[in-house]
Length: 129
Image (cartoon, one colour):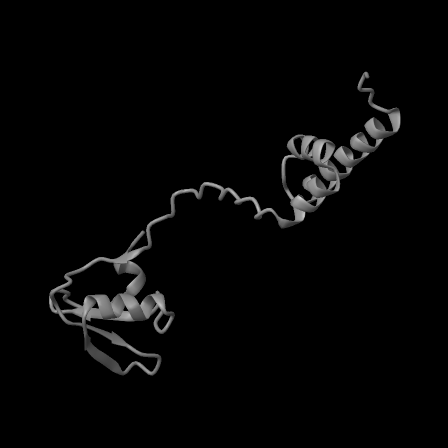
């Protein structure tokens, strides 16, 4: 007794393969692999596409981030700045001044001073890129 594959069985297997490849491509998977899964396993192969875990997305390499600008000056001295009404605010630490600048509470046009400065300076003169 010889084993013979009917043309309808082969055609149905190819159709299942193409169907599983179609769904696999839409779900971001390799359609060639899933064609063979659908070809050999039929409806079970197609259903497996929907139950298989999602493929992990590769993160694009991020360009090196530009370092944040810093305020030049002594970090161990007290700093002062003039608010919008030109009232003196302080003493404040170097890191505190940097923090409020990055939060946008003061701008580059704010005047700052510490013990080693002979006079008030604009913050933009003290910032190092």
